[in-house]
Image 1 (cartoon, chains in turn cyan, brown):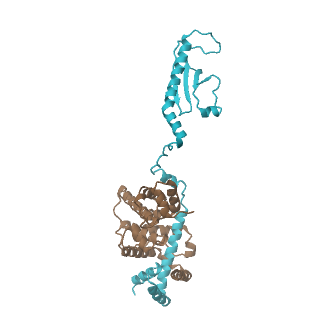
Image 2 (cartoon, rainbow over the protein chains, first blue to last red; image 1 turned 135 degrees about the vertical axis):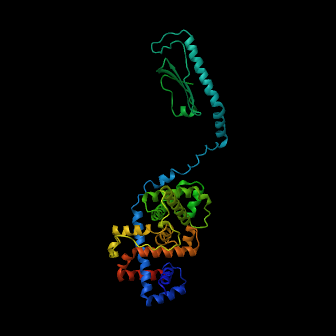
Image 3 (cartoon, rainbow over the protein chains, first blue to last red; image 1 turned 90 degrees about the vertical axis):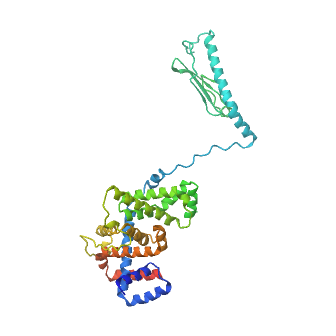
Length: 189
Length: 211
């Protein structure tokens, strides 16, 4: 048997690629052939050395941040879906109210606030030292914010003096029940 | 309860990043091990392993489960590594050399330089032996290097290697035979120093595996 054949047979045995009958024949030969045994030994030693070497290479690696770097390249998960439609008649009524009437109320509140201020400016009033002096009668609705059915903030600066701005809160039932009353100087509607 | 690879893959197919993370944590070392064996550079190996996982996630819908997840992953890792080698070869404008010869050619390349026999029990732990192994692996073609790592380190069967490398069983056996022969030649000075004790242990180990 040539060296090449011997190695080839030793490999098939070593890799478990022989049938049981072939393996038995090979093992009988192995007892009589130091060359075959040497081939097997070399195969086993080569495997041991290689495994040990590769284990060291992997053990020496730092896997911190490995997944993060992978994740950064992935398509982002689908955004969370909009909240489910409210269940029950009460929920549907609240949703309908919030959707159609809240903007109307907010607009009305803003108009009312402007009218109120214009009225105050045009009517002669007793001067209160504590009231801010509004120069020139110009009023500006600075910001109207609709934060769902909860709050509307209208800010009207007078002569760039933030401290004298008027703030009007529109509160819904939840806020009132939770005791979120307006602070001094703020007008609840 | 630990999910199987198949279950994790099914979750990944629904876009579940957490399931994907479990797969990455489970296989990152093995993917890196293959990559560093082929590329022989830690940074390149890390990049290649990460790129392979990104490809896994992007193509997970195409995984039908006909093969095991890890053979599919290994195939991707191997392909990424081979692409990497080819790109670098182009980038460096390096001429075709012995390292990348046709895969089935016999490669008999004794190591140059400073090899000397030593007792493997001692040498096994030494940097010198690591250097020799590194050099020996570097002298194998990329296909031979890949196949010997898949068989000897990862313990894949001939059939699994054929799947990973997308070749016939006969090609696997032929490449493995040449790869071993070349590696043995390179390591011969060290293996000869193994002595009869190691020989006996190896022989017994082999017989135990069979029984």
